[in-house]
Image 1 (cartoon, rainbow, N blue to C red):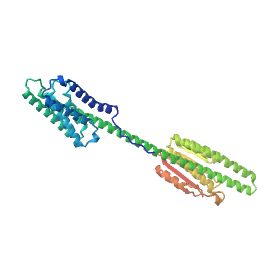
Image 2: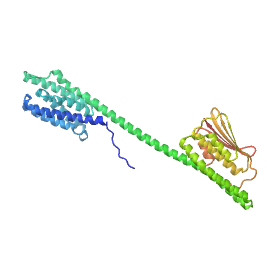
Image 3: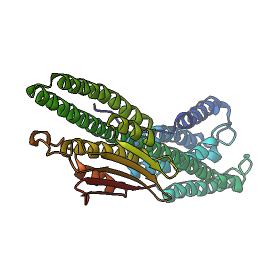
Image 4: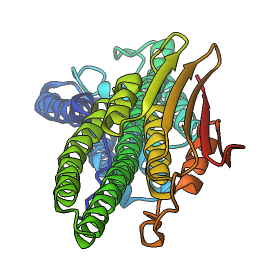
Amino acid sequence: MATTEQRPDAGPRHFHDELIRPFLVAVAVAVTAVQWPHGHILYPAVALPLFVLTTVAAIGALLPTGWMTERQRVAVMAAYMLFGSLLLPLAHQTAMAAMFPYVAAASAGGVLASRKAAIGVAVAGALAATGATQLVLRLAPDAPQWSWWVTLTVALPVYIGMSNRDRRDALRNAQLAAEEARRATASEAREAALIERGRIAREIHDVLGHSLSGIALQLDMADALRDSGRGQDAVAAVRRARALAVDSINETRRAVHALREDTLPLPDTLRLLAEHGAVEFTVTGDPVAVAADQAHTMVRTAQEALTNAAKYAPGARREMRLAFTADHVTLTVRNGPPPEEPRADLAGGTGVGLVGLRERAALLGGTLRAEPTREGGWTVELELPR
């Protein structure tokens, strides 16, 4: 399903910042316009056009920056700063006209991408305000006027604007990073879910494969016993096949539960497996908790080894040993020589044999060894690191 990517912003703080400049400009324009007729404006023929140009430039500076190139933004901010600075000494006695160059300097710092350009605009405005003030003092020495050092301070708000811009950029970058982290986490979760599904499917396949193989053995045995006239033994074999089917369902449920909870009691599971197959089982060393992947591999190895023993050495003595040492956990499954030659039609594989289990053991840093014994039997030994 397609998703629409939204660019994160700085949240409520960014929204408030965007309202401050329009509010200050609106207040400065409105108050200056109201006070203009009674504000004792110096040289009204010059001051009025400057006021109009300053208002137009201020409105232009409020337009979305995406509509202009960087040079156009610099030009607008420079005009805003220059007109406001030149108006400063002429409208000295109004309450809000002096706000224009200060707001212009802050706007330049917050809007212009180049710090050098923003500082240049602010400094040029400060010099223009100082020069215009000195000129007006010469032309009208009796009129009240700003001190020269006050006019130089109109450049200082540029640092406030740059600070706000840096803060917004930092917040935006942090939100982008957080969004990327959320996407990465979601991607990892999806990948982990796919891996877990594959593992569950593989484990259930193994459980069902071994169980169905055992059921097939019992049914074939029942068919052979019936053909030889041993009806009661054939019925017993069918019952054993049914018991294997029930056990298969239980084993599948236990496998799914163990995979979900990552808690598989290895000695108990192997003991239960040995009891179902009438296999001798011993545990040596001090049992410790085994990782879920290791426990699953050992259980599947035991099932594979016991199933192969039942296929290729039916009726042979079988034993299983689980050994815990300081560094390793070792599972050994042995069977003796077959008392009789196994039937060829019962020797088919399930598709997941010792080759696949050997690969699993290698992935876990262990080894799997399968070889015949001197007595004619077979030994399967799995060793995994703790």
